Amino acid sequence: MSVLWIDGVGCFWISLAERVTVGGPGSPSSKPPHPRDVADIAILSDLKRRHATIVRTGEGYLLEAHGPARVAGRDVLDRTTLSEEALIELGRSVQWRIRQPSALSLSARLDFVSDHRPTQAVDGLVMLADTCLLGPGDENHIVCSDWPGQVLLVRQQDELWCRSRLDLTVNGDRLGNGKRLRSGDVVMGADLRFRIEMRAVILPGNE
Image (cartoon, rainbow, N blue to C red):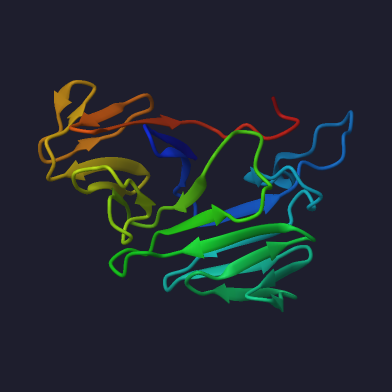
């Protein structure tokens, strides 16, 4: 899981995984949970420790329910397809919405609709299948309204590369035809700046 800090826009998680589990922090216990019993994204809520899994397939996204869940107002007993702008409801009150803004990319963004958040302040999650588009238009996965143009985060196996037609630098070096991003890299240009950190997300109880 990578963390993308975008000046003037917010903080976003970038996941290259095909499966992302969502759940609650669980009941306080002196015995730490086994890693497989901890969700990738732990929300401060009354959800089960592993309440649901969002799965990227070759054609789109599915939700696998391990606890009470609804998608587009319908109960999910096992799994269901996630359509564009579908409202995901977990438990009694946790709500997310999924977006696939670009017809040219299988990547999807998950936005928090309810007030429930992870312990780390974050504005959304991008499940990155191929590219993550950042820029001023609604076709971007992360809308950066004041940017002069578009920036692409491109997946190459388990690496992230930055590409753009804008005049950008990475840690002061010209972007040129593109550069591989490493943890701590800062990308800058006219009226834009972002930093990426590649690290594990700290879950409640694992600090």
